[in-house]
Length: 83
Image 1 (tube, rainbow, N blue to C red):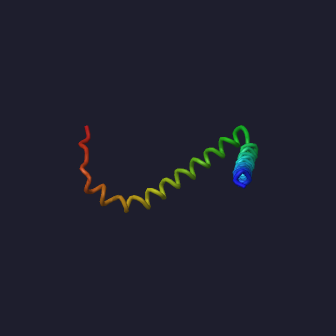
Image 2 (cartoon, rainbow, N blue to C red; image 1 turned 60 degrees about the vertical axis):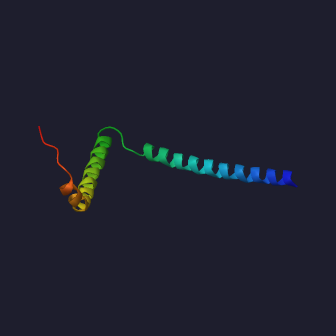
């Protein structure tokens, strides 16, 4: 009976690995499809510039939110002299 249990547990483990591999393959396919849909040439450059601008905006927003939270710590921290 214990051999049967070992065999069943192996089957379960293999099924889990198969499902995980199928999920990863599906995810990789979706990423590849997304890469193929990106424009080429100058349009690709404009897309990149747009993404950079959005990243800059996110950085500004994050800094605006974090600055008030970090201000008390920055005020009490010793400052290094500028050379």
